[in-house]
Image (cartoon, rainbow, N blue to C red; front, side, top):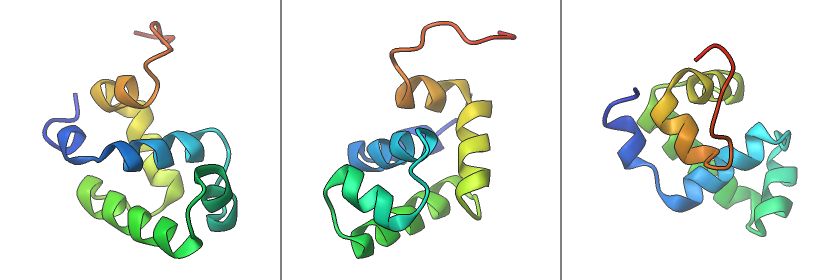
Length: 84
């Protein structure tokens, strides 16, 4: 469980994490996928990294995958994960 970090993320930040985990890693691709400006993407990413204590996209994706509560919030459609 990821503790209180999970509860601090906004719905828009969750959407951004979902888009990143789906393969949109460049700011421009994230901006297009979420229909927001690249500057807004940068702001959201900074907030996410600060809230979760990660330093970049790779650490963020790994953090999500290793924290069941956050993972379930980002991917509610997946009910069963391997090795759990």
